[in-house]
Amino acid sequence: MSDRSISRRRMLHLVGAGGVGLVTASCVNTSDSTGGGAGQPARPKSSTAFDIPAATTKLPSGNVRLRWMDSGDMKARFFEKFFPAYQKKHPNISVKYDGTNWNQITQVVTLGVRNGTVPDVFQLPGQITMGMAVSNGWIGAYDDIIPDFDKVKARYPGYSFAPGVTDFGGKTYAMPLTGNGRINNLLLFNRDLVKDVGADLANEVITWSKLREVCKTVTKQGSGKYYGIIFGLAQPGGLAGPVSTLCEMAGVHGGADGIDWRTGKYNVTNPIVVEAIELMLAIRKDGSAHPDSVNLDAPGARSRMPLGQAGMMFQGPWNIVAWREDNPDFHLGLNIPPQKNPEDIWPLAFGPGGSNSWVYSSKTKLGPVIGDIMSYLSSATGQVRWADYDGAADPPSFPDAIKKAKLDDLQQKAMDLGAKHTVIRPEPAVRNPDVSKVYEVQVPAQPSFSDTLVGLYTGRIGGSVEKAMKQMEDRLEKSLEDAIKKAASRGAKVSRDDWVFEDWNPRAPYTKLYQD
Image (cartoon, rainbow, N blue to C red; front, side, top):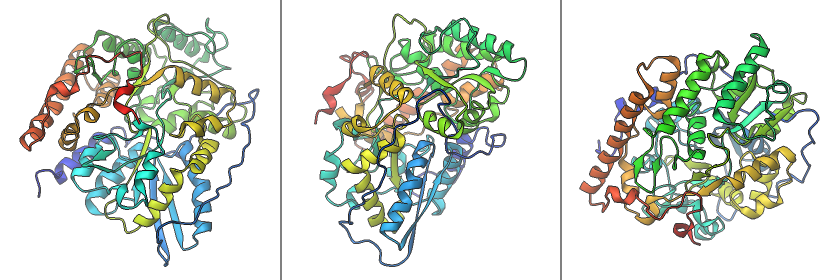
């Protein structure tokens, strides 16, 4: 076996790391069951017909079946309409669409790439980096299956594709159909449960301390029937996502477990990171968090909100339409996340590559079908249809398609907050393409930041937060340093200096790397 490939033992470790909480996680439908509620305007109607053009490549003539897996939510609402339309256009092609949760994706993909059962099209779980998938030959290049791919690629904004993110060795392995300009951890709340909490959550930017206070108040008012806040900790990112958002908007540039691109150093030992984690632990200690939070994945947690089991949660705008349609009596509100200092709010920095990227199996025999579908989804028409169904949930990559989307007030507010509080950040592999060779061999730090936070929350990890974060920093540093050394030994011209951008202003978009 090549030293670039992943051993079976290592793969099983990745499955285990990604499956924290799988045994106790709720089995729930992965489509969002979240919404806007009575008293809010109905979602504007627009034409959602699919005018699918004739294929520009030869498609199979016999009966074939395409398997497609992703993380569902509002994406599922699009694909559950699109794929029947595609099948009507091509009756011999059937599609098995599985919009599921990240725990299931982790299990299916990490094992499937090894034993040949991986779906034809899928999203990569966090335990498998894009570089790892490319270097092990698990995924194929879109250059090989999409006709006139250079022209298709040119339709996207310049920062949609980048070496080491979507591109490796001069080819593109991921299609970023959706953009990144959104806040993934908005403060979402049940308006009926937060009416008398000493704060106007819809219009007031509350502080971290006020968040804890509101959680206490709602929990007291609930008398065991509902709680201040609910998390989905049985899924990677369930606590790490909110913590990182709070920290970055408080001035931890690059996020809680990310890199401050001005210095090239990891942020996890930053005092603000420690403070944010301790805030979450304090909310739990107060008894203000829903007691099932540890056992719930993200869909499971969000399904409790319209049932009136929690006053607040941190999640994204993908909940708005689904909650409204499935629970019309639920009164949803949203706002920017709580701030350490509401007078000094820093933007959230996102990297190139989009908020959702799809890859395809190198073993698939349906490359022409996948290429045809991706060509349509990468067209102006396809992107507008995506916006019609997904709106603010997963905004399309094309700016013109976003402008044509017909949004209700809550979705528009979410879009406006995303536009105001997000900026594109530097990416080392764009400046030095050899950095992509580091990503190809880098093994993610384990236990991860997400695992560590859940361990602190449940008490499985003892000691101080400071100690846990120092150990996390050591693991992150080792992961990156080992990868740099390995890539350099194979001829890559890289050093830790490639992760330093001294001219980065965290308040402004770093566009110089991504000029069209």
